[in-house]
Image (cartoon, rainbow, N blue to C red; front, side):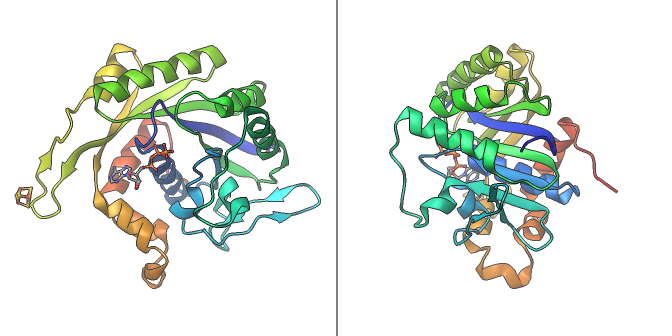
Length: 267
Ligand SMILES: Nc1ncnc2c1ncn2[C@@H]1O[C@H](COP(=O)(O)OP(=O)(O)OP(=O)(O)O)[C@@H](O)[C@H]1O
Ligand code: SF4
């Protein structure tokens, strides 16, 4: 099922709540804005957030003769999403599964989702290195189209240290680390544009330099992102999330990240 995908990119973080799903969402929006056809696979089984991120909470997975059909963002089919969240229904539901059941679900996600021809598939993973990570690494072991992993951290030392473990994991399972993103790097005042480093900043960049890995960029805490996500359905008459995101300062930061990842605008 993954043969008709040109590039597979995983998004990892050593710790929960550092903004991995927000980064995955913005990387997907950036790729779509560049003209690519993108799929997002959410394998964060205990906290699937992709349906909410794309305003697709009422999306339904359909069965075809070949497998599960992902939920399309709109009729253009340039963005498709697969998440356990669609199968759970109610936003408040979460699953408490043991390892083998999680592993089986991930195998099904890899083998049974009928993606259309995609330029990129982004995989949003749970935090840390869990059963889900081991399962996905096994499933992707022989896939030639895996570019590697983007690792997300926040500037705090504890988060940066967790990233080191994540990078060790990537080395063990042969995922190339495409780069490190430092999220929540300072707060930009919406009134005066002054950037205040609430936490110490620069940890992600220092770690990247230290480990000789590419540093993809710093993303400030920006309430605009949450507003866009929360209000996207109400604001649909002003344009899609893709268009609205394109007007935000965050989109410029992620466009630069895309350049560092070698993503060029399609003509
Ligand atoms: N740069 C940012 N500016 C403002 N809010 C942000 C930023 N990054 C993340 N957030 C917010 O922080 C919260 C946690 O982010 P997110 O869900 O992306 O983290 P995560 O690492 O995927 O979490 P989990 O461990 O649950 O998978 C969300 O409400 C998100 O909107
Ligand atoms: S100048 Fe300082 S206090 Fe005033 S709005 Fe900006 S960050 Fe807040």
